[in-house]
Length: 200
Image (cartoon, rainbow, N blue to C red):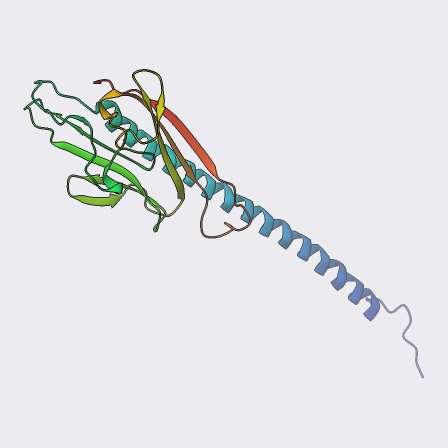
């Protein structure tokens, strides 16, 4: 019987230990990748929510600043209005306004911003039809409060007959991420802005 002298190679135990160590290292690298990917996705979603809120706030601010514009002095309905329904009035969950943009004595801009609770969307009604101001359901709440000429705050100036006395509007829009990882990151982001209508 001949014995092999100076046999070189790995034993089965050495191979199993090497595979085990490699598997643990691969598992750790995979976990780091998954965690990093999750954080990146959450940050992208948060940035998207914040961008949606800021864009909606900018669009609304422009219209609110123009409320009551009446260069000819003959557009009697220019200003904040109450059209009789909850989505078309000026209260804590909606704001309805009109202004004469071209100076012809007719308020051709007739807009209402309101929060659609069922679909979790900020909506804008421009004349007769409504459409979402944001494309997804990231907006979780919208609130309007009104400072009157005497400095008091009124949440329902339409009901209280104070539409003509509105001098400042504070708009608060809140949102949160939806979709992937929403359950892991339930934070709500709120932005608030106080707007002075230039024409009232």
